[in-house]
Length: 70
Image (cartoon, rainbow, N blue to C red; front, top):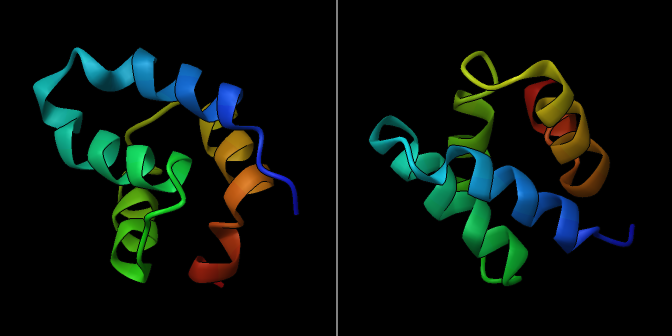
């Protein structure tokens, strides 16, 4: 699966100004840099109820987070 890093970066920028999303943004940043671990994916999944549904779908299409959930 080819990752659309530009789209993921746009999502990162959207939430980066909110301190409550620091962990989410840190994990998403590591995904964009291809330096992520399973813990980063789990952290992103833990924020799926707090971010916009469109962003969850975009992240899933690029990273496959629904595979972790199910």
